[in-house]
Image 1 (tube, rainbow, N blue to C red):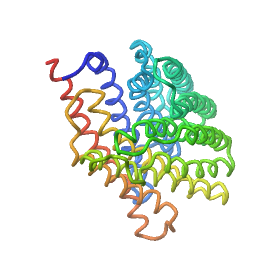
Image 2 (image 1 turned 135 degrees about the horizontal axis):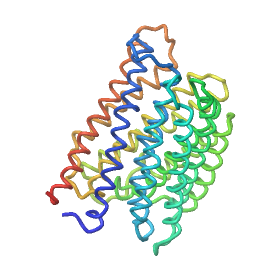
Image 3 (image 1 turned 120 degrees about the vertical axis):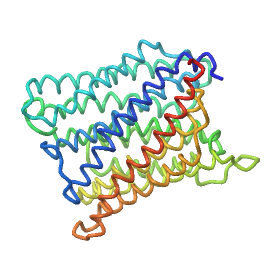
Image 4 (image 1 turned 60 degrees about the vertical axis):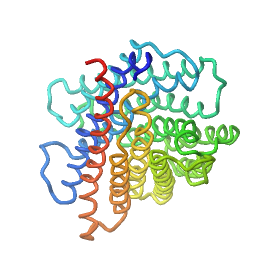
Length: 412
């Protein structure tokens, strides 16, 4: 049975979840699968500039799939963390509308000769920045309010809100060559935007939520507040340096991630008196896989920055985006989606299948990226990475749709 808060928030929560997965299935995982198949086995693509399609895909994954999920979940859980009132539905819907509109306009990048393309891309960048500014305002206002005692994990959530704005600013800078008529974004500014959004906006939010829910979801011991405060400061410095470029930032983040893995505790013995439930064991597997991939991804990014090796950087970004980000969405989402919507419990076979598939996809995508591309098995493996990742997403999305749909049945 839905409580009053769930009933009131359900349509907006469902809007964020549905929009996030719709973008992921199409411009995110779907387009990424086509790009991999084209690059590895020559599957044809529409007549568009390949680098532009890659940039549209990456933006859709970060801002559309991950970004909308972060926003949609944050507006529900931050007030619960703080014991504060929910942000206004009007403000939340406006933030959603601004970011969603920017995402709908961004594919104009791939049609270099389209009339009004420059104005459309400029509008896309401005709308995204406005949406991130509004989201940050709502999030920071909620984090500063409430009756609950402040906790150190809230620092990561505040960092995430700030880097959403920073990432959108870099993205607007990156759009300048395309607004002027070029086919692709400014490479260096786009790299900075990806770093700010992936590690700062999305990554910091995931870490903050992980620290808060790990005791309840996987029976982990609460992280020491002093350790979390130090880790938050180090993460802020590391993401800032990574956004600016150079090898120091990823190395700072790598060291910090090792501290965070110990603090969150997915690999340590839990404090639960009784054996974990089946659902908690599934979430613990996702936590372990996700944070292992975070460490691996940051190690690859650090090695890439030191050695100047682009394949290592590509492997590192995909290890974090697929292995860390997507896997933690599957694990934590399998518990949060029913809790936030009041729908049926998430089917555990679907959650397990999605977690297994996304780990296979990450091994193929990140592991084989650094292998000699002339090796036939590497070519086949990389070509398979996209379909396997898309299958993982479809399995999870179908189960999530079932849960959300069940929450609406009392209204029928």
